Length: 199
Image (tube, rainbow, N blue to C red):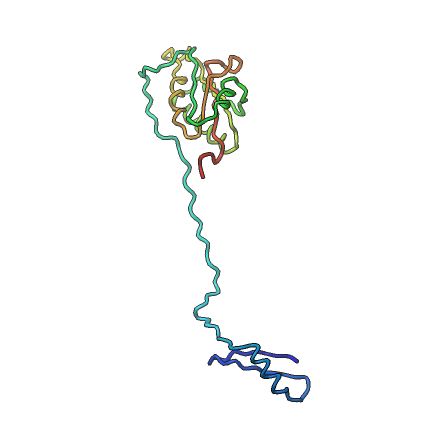
C-alpha cells in the first residue's frame, strides 16, 4: 500500500490512499492512520528564506609599528665604544636573560650596519625584526661597530640602538655580545614569539 500526503492551502490534511487492489480500506484502519498522523500545519513559505546566512568576517587589525622616536644625541647617557649594553623588558625570566648574556642563545640572523646612516639602519633593522618575528626567529645579531671611523669619532649607531630598541614592541631584550661575536661593537637581540601577549 502506498500512501501520499498533500497539504491543502486551507490547512486541512488530505490523504490519498492508493491500493493495489480495488477493495476499500477498512474504516477502522483509516481512522487509526489519521489519529497517528495528527494535525498538520501548512508551511508559510513567504517567511522562510532559502538563502544561506552570510558570515561576517571582522577585518584584521593593522600590524603595530614602532612609535616615532626622537633621539637626543646630547643625552647624559652617552655610551663609549667599550661600554657594555644591556636591556630586558619587565617580566622576562631571569634564566632567559642570563642565557642571553652568556651567549647561549645563538643568533638566527645577522646584520652588519657598518657605513650605514641612522635612517638606513632603522629601515634595515625594522625589516630584519619584522621578518624575524614572522619566521619565528628568537634571536638576531646586530653589528653596529664602535664608531672609531665615524665622522663624530663616537659610536653613534651604538647609542642610537641602545635607546631605539628599548621602545620596539617586538624586542624583549638585548645585550652586548661576547668578544667572538663582536664584543661591545655588536648586540644580541631577543625577539618576542609570534602571538606573545596578543590574544
